[in-house]
Image (cartoon, rainbow, N blue to C red; front, side, top):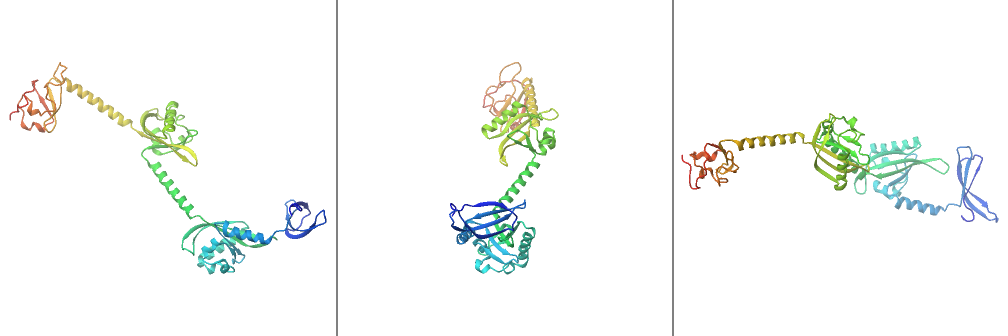
Length: 393
């Protein structure tokens, strides 16, 4: 038919909307049955569409295939009074009855009054608004008792003449999607809580432009900038790091994917130089590459270590230059350290005395309880006696 009578459209004076059959004669004088659809247009004219006649058997078969096999969602149709006109097999699972046993019945014959009233309310809402109505609702499948959350779309439906027929409903099982969304939400909440309350300075940076998109309070306290001042800026723009340092850190992360406790320095807003342990790793946020970084301030620790080292050096100088012999001894009597004699380069005033009990090598009287003392100040600079000598009591 299409090669004899292709679809034709043309403009004419306004006509009421309708679709009807008709007969047209082609140039050879042959008659053809056609479907004519008349659609009013906004400019006051109407659009005529002429098509070969619809094969209603084929159309019905396609409709049933679509409803029963192609659509995984629950689908149903109700009239204006809420009585069921049609449904698909997925909806039969919900109701626990076949379509033939459902037709002509309403929700109050299958559900508790409160739930049936809820369904009817949304039916009327779609009818009154003249457009789709969307809501979420928990349902229990009658065939296996499983409880699911569905997203329901109810749409007013019309016949070919534009008369309101009822409401078409489509419900999709979104239970797993909701579980995933809730899991994600809880994960985000936990991350946000940890991020905000962490005693470690943490920042999130967009890898494409190096701009800060979030910082926590500890970060603000460390560098001296407020969150509002920092967001949208880069560490280089804020003067926290130099271009060279910034590039070095980003290259390390690009190469290794992550950095742990890399020692470096940053500059605070006040100009103070702080020693930090820098850690960073890449993460994706909304499909965009970002960098999660943390600073651990070790300035005070390094200063304490430096002060301890200086103190030990001062002690060692004092220990090594004392005019009296000083010996450190473990609890078992083993000599652990002793100062050198004055004006000599000898490592020990008592040769072969290290790692030996002091009572076995001392030439001066010492109490037998000397093994319980960690240090003894010994006046004479005498060489160690033979190992078989003992201190007197």
